[in-house]
Image 1 (cartoon, rainbow, N blue to C red):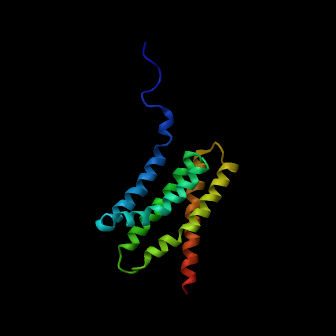
Image 2: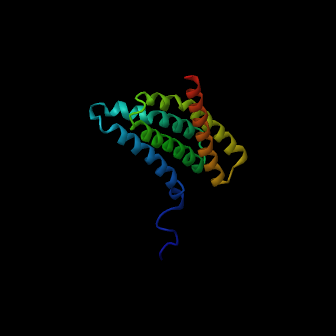
Image 3: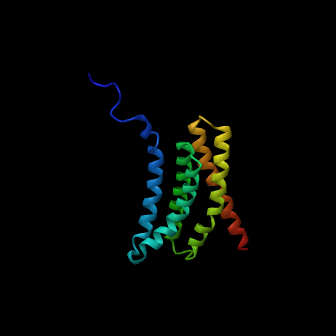
Length: 151
């Protein structure tokens, strides 16, 4: 008698958006580091290690998959915008802005984790938006702080 269970279990499907967001960030970092093959590992680490640290610390708190997806999407979008900015010849030291933005992202992820656990438990859309919005707001505020400290 055939089983009534689906061919693909439902549990791994809930992690698919998180895996896609994680792969987006990894592929951006690898693509950005690839042209300088002699320094690939160093460049890859410089582009993706800050993201990896934030995501690793977040995973240590066992977040909802939607929250992890939101945080990973915000970090990957930040790297995407940075890659678009750094390819222009305007600012050769732009990579410093990228690295100095991560304290804000870490604080935003921590606040989003706290709020998701206390306000959005069982609401995946709200958790994902909290993750994305918290990290994006932290990145934006940190970027503005770095810009204003230059003047």
